[in-house]
Image (cartoon, rainbow, N blue to C red):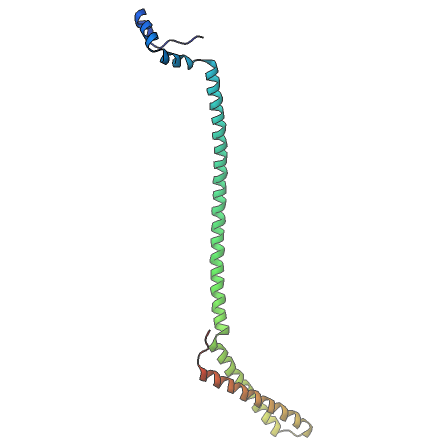
Length: 168
């Protein structure tokens, strides 16, 4: 086995070299092992394995980065969807409160009372101006029905107002 000698060994005397060999056999043995071809081959194999492992880790890291970017995009799109949902929910809630609140129902009931009263007044005028007695029974029945509905709705409104605000 050819092992290169350390630098400046030519400056040492034979006795010094002999002392070094006897006193430092272990260190010299390790130095010589550095140059053994079997050892070098195993180091090269280990280095190649580690290189392959590092390349594999690099690929996995790249995939993780890609996944991270995709997840961030998805999170951002979900945030936008959540904002849209929140806005639509608030709009729907506002619309619901405007269309179905207690005050709206009271106004609708008052409007219904006013309409029924106007319709019954029209029927009353038609009854007094009728010339055909065959239609009189029909008009009287309609008038009576409108007045019943008017008084029933008026009683509902009065009871409602007397009870106060409805509890949710």
